[in-house]
Image (cartoon, rainbow, N blue to C red):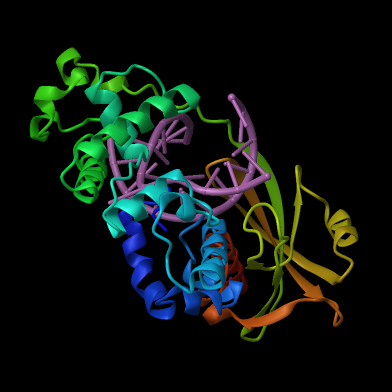
Length: 309
DNA sequence: TAGTCGTGGTA
DNA sequence: TTACCAAGACT
């Protein structure tokens, strides 16, 4: 859960997840949709699927136990260099290095390394540096957690609190007063725009949903049928794309949903499905307990508001 | 190597 | 309002 996700947000979801799946065996026996539902709102849902697959591997290969070596850990789906090192050091006390966004920034500033933290060259430098520290530490677990915590609370990307930093005296960037631009920022790809035509039918207390495709955005999660395109479709075109729609009652509204890499223009249509349409009817009030994206919750909210109006 | 994969906080 | 980033991994 902590991959690319702040600990404060994980803290909201982790207890319930652990109650439902207290060990690898229970997770391995679960359905994918049940795991996704407890991941609701956290994003990067592939992590949930990988974790479940990893649990199944642990049951099959390790008797339901978590393997201890970095090499074995990294062979599990969704466990890369960072996660393997974090588990090996923090859970099992081994002298394994970790480099996350925080550690990369802290190390870069101490060395006043005026480069980006991405790429092979940076990786080599960061990981070998972290390795030396882990080997030298009395407790690699405490070292690793402290490095991340320092980066998260003191050595922040902008406006770092150097006055409170225990490493101020050893920090190259503090001495050079270069904290604001060290490390150099990683350039982001420009955001693309896509159009989602969301086809909503609410019958009484139920809404028609289907499973999204196995690849791409929100893959495998539940959603009202959505027609995706690069531009806005006419209702005629929309009907051709979804022959299981009997008629489009009206266009309700459009709003934007931002993800890191795209702007999703979501257009909500009130429709009537054919009786033979392959949609599953679920309770609107319980939708937020199912495997749906936040975008779907926005769609339903918009649909309900307009129905009242 | 560069793109993909969510959502929310911050300045 | 926009850009950037978060206890990354995978293709």
